[in-house]
Length: 189
Image (cartoon, rainbow, N blue to C red; front, top):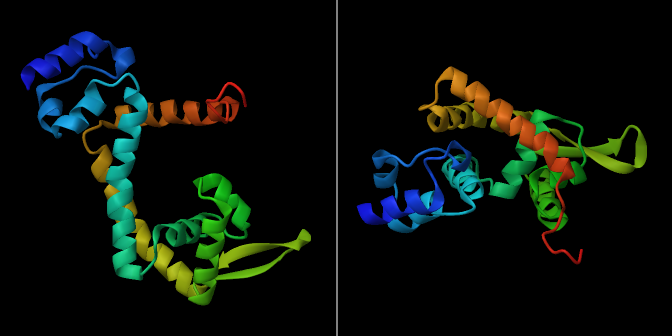
């Protein structure tokens, strides 16, 4: 196993900070073989590491919300989006979450049926609707916030305050630039 890690370091330059930092013995032992290859011997190291970390947040959080509140992931995405900014349209949730319209539409309908959200005509456009949390929805949002914050703290625990600030600034820079990214990797489109 050590040979593979050493080959990965040598072949892909993981001691180069531009490639995500060095591979440590702790990092090598922390994951199973295939995950290790994807994390440390992968030319797309950033994307895989980001997704791997996101799963470390998403799986426990969405499992918890389903167990404690009976909400599937798309339903919770809708509830959480409205909890952060009430008075939004379903299309706003689609664009911010990446879920397709039909998935969000079904989630909205389920939350309406459960009395967790309400829909009203948009004040500035009588042809559109906006969504708000009901009192029941606000209680669920408030109940889920602390476990989510605590889970995020688990993910960030190894970073110093300065490293957290640097990570936040770097990710914000990438998010701002994301509007310039092509929407497809197909050169024909």
